[in-house]
Length: 102
Image 1 (cartoon, rainbow, N blue to C red):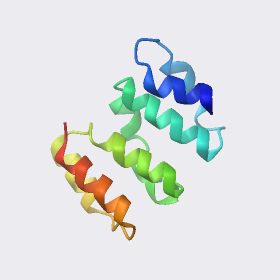
Image 2: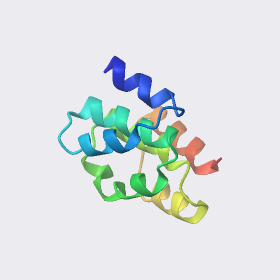
Image 3: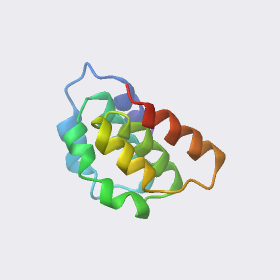
Image 4: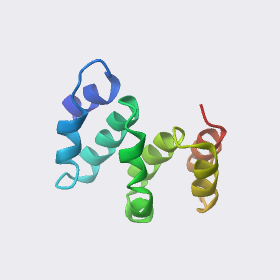
């Protein structure tokens, strides 16, 4: 987790293609870090492929995906975020922040 966390914060290493290959077979904690690494690497198209998986993600993955969704095109971002309800206050705050966009 520590190593994956490092990758999610460092965009100067050209590493995302290798992480993307590992996403499908990873545990939820690793998937969260790979999602964050995708955001750092500006892999928005790759992230958009996981919109339909949002409901099945665990709570921390959903928060990470909401964080990443901030980079989606404005209309797509608003539609995606408005599609869901956020019962936890922190999730609602992250969703509101992500909806504002970059």
